[in-house]
Picture 1 (cartoon, helix red, strand yellow):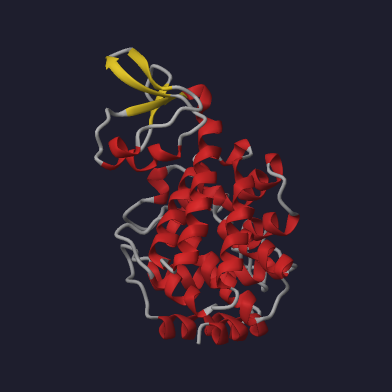
Picture 2: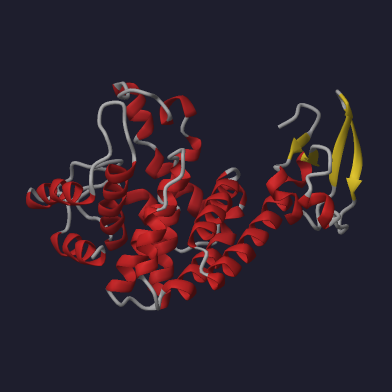
Length: 305
């Protein structure tokens, strides 16, 4: 945020701002109105990038986020119809990134509509979700991880013939399972090494934080919050944050898919990303010693075929 109370907006997103006023900077501490609330920017100027750097007022931030979310949801629905899977994923990542910028402020309400669009668009063609999850971007982030986990989870739900309502809840839980990481210091999230014991203890607070965020100001079901709380728990009690053996179905499912996605896509300083088959063999060992649910694991394997 600019110290003057204005926030710069991304050039790629300015066409979404319809009801929010936009400003341009005239000097170090002076801003002038560029587009009034309800006004439109000329499409030609947007396409040719013929406009100055634009800003919104800090007081309009939440309203602006919700307006962007609505625009992204429309774009996702349009891209699903045209079959542009890459565009769907790229837009979804942008949407989730904007949403997680202010997750405590009721902005999560836009995501159920997003999941609805994905279910409606891909329930008849679940194989597309495998392509969706395999599309990679240059920088692997929590946002991309969350989107991938959601795609794999929806694939599992379609394979298991869950009804639409159940699929929606579980898919939304997958998308928000790591929302608590928004409150973890970036120095820990992006540490280019193994975390120290103290750092890891801080990292282990993210499930409880995520549970609180979802339950606090967002009218989203308890199953979604449980997914955030329990996705690092293990059936033998060796997980965190509570070390419980009594884990919900959603928590057990997301625990498996979260591990699979991270192991197959995320390079760490101390290990390289694994191949899918190698990862499944690794996870099967945890199934054998009682950390993961065998039935859920086997169904997940079949859902990948």
